[in-house]
Image 1 (cartoon, rainbow, N blue to C red):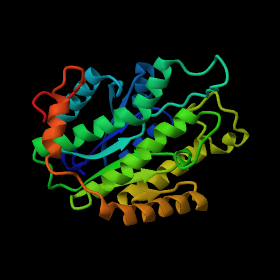
Image 2 (cartoon, rainbow, N blue to C red):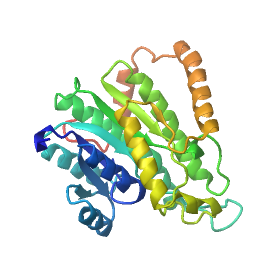
Image 3 (cartoon, rainbow, N blue to C red):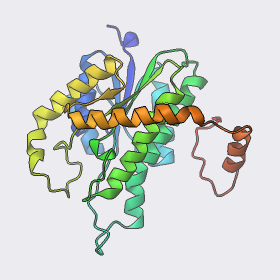
Image 4 (tube, rainbow, N blue to C red):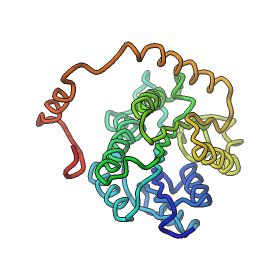
Length: 284
């Protein structure tokens, strides 16, 4: 396969842990992969392991870094056909003690797990329209967690932020249902990747390097097959919870809609000086 024929994928947090395993398996299936991350040393190590891997240092919670990341994608000179929103953080906290999360740390967790991938998704869809890619099949793969479906007592803010992203993913899939964009959600278990280092989970050891590689391969296979929900650990109750939520959404959504004039209202809100628009130059 020639370089020009290889489809382009962007994997956030793609230089370490589950993200690196996803990048590796996407490369093996013929993708041209751009991995972004915040840590230069990890990016260099990932590229040393996978010489064909493109890397760029970018903090997805920083608007200027997102500008650079999108510019890097466009500089490659081919359509972006797969966006993998994988980057995430998890901090243990206890709101009954003084060692709970500060405002800045809580905001960073919400930004990384929810607000930043939502913004990157918006930019991805805008790039498709701006670059004339909107008729090409594409995929948005959001890496979720079973902890988005029920509360995790040791880190409730993580559950809340991922639950928000889970609901966004399900709603986005419905909005894009009549487009060539497939929206995928992945529910890996707690893997031994360094995510959530403050959590005491005795069973995490069974989800080390071999499990990470196996689950990543399972995930990539599911993405290529066009599956909407991918359960690498094949936990029945997780799949059941997702199906139940989708069934409720199917019943409720026909009764809801956007009011007449909603677009003008949104434009007016975005023009307020207090709003941080953080958008690409020339984007709507």
